[in-house]
Length: 320
Image (cartoon, rainbow, N blue to C red; front, side):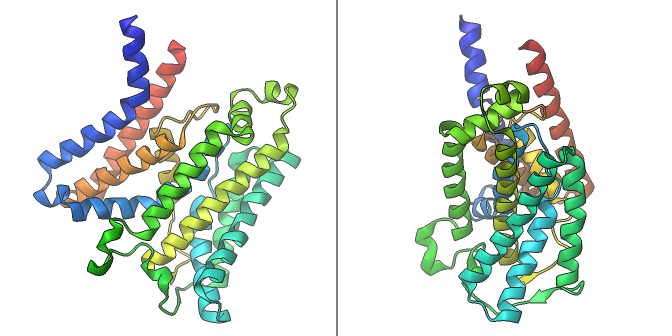
């Protein structure tokens, strides 16, 4: 009985305890600046781009799929924002909204190809990754697009003293709000239950009357939607539209979701877990950077954590 209770508590709070342990480790071994409130706020801001994209990726991986195009969509959306501000005279909000809507279309197309042509998600999204990156480079003439200064540039900037009452940058609050809303969607709505059902057993889901194809199209559209929002955040961080950014970002996003407890076999995962996974990756990078460690060491540590997370997932399934 006690073993069952301990196992349930570990499954529920184990990821949070891992996050806390990693943070405390760097608190002791990294310089004192690591544990300051300023650095905590920096860690929160650095988590936003991967974290927002990970919300959409969580739905994809729970459904048993994969999306390799999110990094390219992030770059494309950042270019679109700069393009609309610089070339068309759009005000900031319409520029951001249009970038998100257009970027979401790539996910919609991926969903259509996956469901109608019955092509595996890996191949479709790999092609979409190259297609989207090429469109971004063509739109920007393979160079950065500068844009006039607007309030979009302040979304992920450090808070000035007069706005310290906000505690966190607006972009961080947007991330938290989206995470809460879509955690509710995943857990308590018909669409969320359909996503889990499709990932657990697609044939059974189909026999239960779930519109599998429609669900998958929505899921991949969601993934591109969140990647596009992350692209707006990327523009805010860089203040330019750069078609060469976010190369390999899709691997960070997938890693955050997997570290957060989602199963690559489908049917399992949470938004909260993906958020913790993204935070763990950011904390490791921040700690290693402040300790003066080389980038290749950070990559080794992150890669080892991903392998351990996947190994634990396999062991958990074998015991189940």
